[in-house]
Length: 148
Image 1: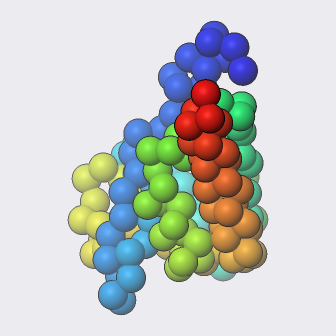
Image 2: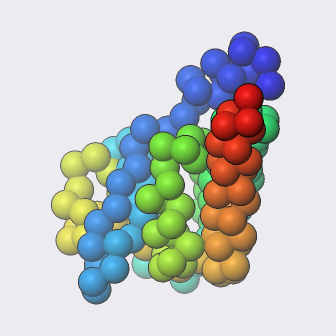
C-alpha cells in the first residue's frame, strides 16, 4: 500500500464508534450523523427487516489493517459503509465477536436507553473469523518489526 493510498484510507476512517452496556454485556455501537440516523429510522421503523452485515478486511502486511463494515438493509434501500482502523478499534471487534450484536445510534442519543437501533448479526461466525484475521494481521506485523 503506497503512502498516498494509506492517507486516503486514514482520511475515510469513521471516528464515531463506542460501546455501551446492555444486559450486562458491552455492545459495540457505530455513531452516525443525526441526519443519517434519522433517515434510516424513518425508512425502517415498525417494519420487519433484516440487515446483512459484511466485514471486509483490508491489510498491507505492514501493520495497517482496516475493516469496511457494510450494512445492507432488506427494506428501504439502505446501504451503509463505515471504514474502521482495526488497530484502534480492537475493543469494538472483540465485543462484536462476543455478542454478535451491533448498535447504530446518533451523537445525541443516550446510549442503551433511547434512539438506538440494534442489529443481531445473521452470521455470528463472520465477526469471530474477522477478529481472528485482524489479530493475526496485527501479530504478524509486530513479529516482523521485532525481527528487523
